[in-house]
Length: 107
Image 1 (cartoon, rainbow, N blue to C red):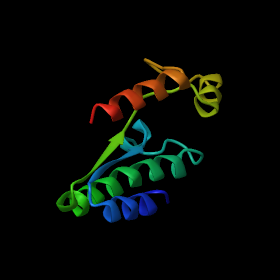
Image 2: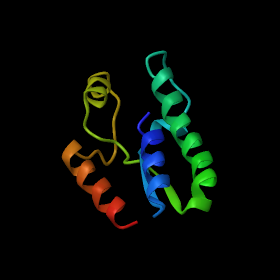
Image 3: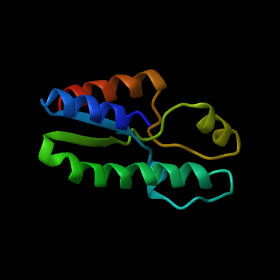
């Protein structure tokens, strides 16, 4: 977990900071097959972990955000598309990364 050492450094610096965690729309849905169970569960866990962390770190001026980029072109979405799953508003991996960095800098 990269959050623990990042928080340690922020605490030592005593300047606050901001942690950005990446999740997925999959964290809002129930797994529809056994292959998606671990994925959707882990993405939900990120959101819950970030919510708790946000409350714990708030007094130290350390913010926590969760980015949920929507549908991104990955091996996983390509495999599902071959099985007939349709994704609305899919973006390229590069485009998603650019948007995430831009939004993170705006915090």
